[in-house]
Image 1 (cartoon, rainbow, N blue to C red):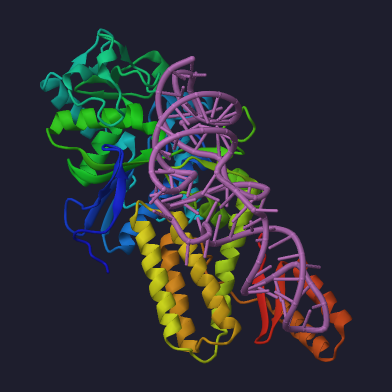
Image 2 (image 1 turned 180 degrees about the vertical axis):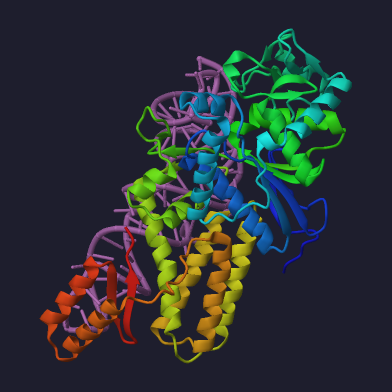
Length: 474
RNA sequence: GCUGGGGUGGCCGAAUCGCUCAGGCGACAGCCUGCAGAGCUGUUAUAUAUGGGUUCAAUUCCCAUCCCCAGCUCCA
C-alpha cells in the first residue's frame, strides 16, 4: 500500500491549474517549504487555516511513507515588523521574538507538527546578498537612483507563469519599494532596499550597501539554502501567489537557471460569518480570542481542516460547536471500544476495516479530499457502534480497531490524548461514596455527589461496565 | 464597474451526465438508565437559486436572470 515511488497521490498544482500525479524529485523523500508568519502580531485563524492545511498535507505524505523535510520561514524583518517595533519603541528583535514565541505556542495548541527548520530572515542576510549579487552580475537586477536594487521583470520571460499575470501591461520603469503594493499589476520589485531614516536602527552593512532585504528575496534564499535549488512543494495562502510567489520564482530561477519549485499549492481564504475577516466588521479572531471564549483548540483544528483547502471556507461559531461534537463522537467510540468484550462475527469486521482504509486513503490521495475521507471514517464509526451494540467485537478486535482509529488520527490530529492522569484522591473518594449511595438506592445522595463533581469539572457516566468519568474543559 | 469563485435538506459541507444526491451538526423517536445535561441506534428532512436549452438521461454541460463572496482599494 505504501508505495513511495510512483505514489497514488494527486495534487492540484497552481502552476498548471491541474491535478497532477505527485512524484518527488528524490524517491521516497519530499522537500517542502511553506510560507510562515510575518511576526508583527498574533496570527489569526485565517493564517492558521494555511498552517493546518500544510500540516494535513505533511501528515498525509508521511502516512504514505514519504520522508518529509519541511521548512517554514519566519519573516522577522519587513515593512510591517519595522513599523510595529517602532510603534512600541522596542528593538526589532525583541519585538519579533515576542510574536515568534506566541506563534510557536499557538501551533502547539493546534497540534501542528513542527517543521524541521524555522529559518529567520534576519539570520540569512548573507544568503540573500549572494543571490542579489548573482542577479546583478547577470544583468537582471539593477540599482535604482534611490540606491535600492530592483529586479527587472522584463528580463525574466516566464514572469507571470504562476499567477497568470500578463506582463504585457507593464509600464516601463514602474517599480515598487514597498512590500505591499497593488496586486494584479506587475512591476519591478525591490531586492534590496537602501537605508532610509524611517528604518531607524534596522539595517545591515553589506557589499550591496547599507540597507535591508526586500520581502520576496527572503523566501528564495531560505528555501534554497535548506531544500536545494529545486525542491518539491511550496505552499502558501492564495494571497501570496502574486506577487510574492511569482517573485520568488523570478529571483530563484533567474539566479540558478534551474526550476525552482515543482508543485505549488495554495489554500483559499477563510470567511467569518459569511464575510471577509476584518477588524472593521468585528469578525476578526486570533486563536487566542477563541480560546478565551472557551473554545476547544482541537475543535478549531477540526473545523478548519474539514473543508477542502482550495475552497473558501465560512467559519462560524455554530460550525465550531458542530466540530466539537464530531470529535466527541470519535473519542467516545474509542472509550467504548476499551470496554468491548464480545464474540466475533467473523469476516464482517475485516471487510469494514478494509473498506475504511481504502476509502479514506483514496479520498486523501485525491488532492486531500478531506470531506470524503471523513465521511468514510464516520461510516466506519457507525458500523462499529452497531457491532458494539450487539456485543459482536472481541477484546482483541477492539484493540485492533482502536489502533486503526489512532492511525487515522495521526493524520487528522483531532482526538485528544487519553487522560492518563489520576484523579485527585478527594475525587476518587467522592466517586466511591456515590457508588455506595447508589447501591443503597440513596438516589438523593448520589445525585448530590454527582452534581458536586460536575462543579469540579468531572462528568460521571454510569455504564454496565462501571463508572466512566471525563474531564470537561471550558 | 472589471476579474475570479459560488448558490445542494434547519446549519456546515461532499459527489456525480443515470441504482433512492456522502458525511457531520441539529431535531425527533426508540434503547439504555433509579434518574441523567451521558451514550448508542434509527428516522427525519418531500435539498441541488430561477427560467430556458442540449441529451435516452443533468444537480452535474450550454444560455439568460437573480443573489452571495473574494480580489482590484496597505491590517491573508
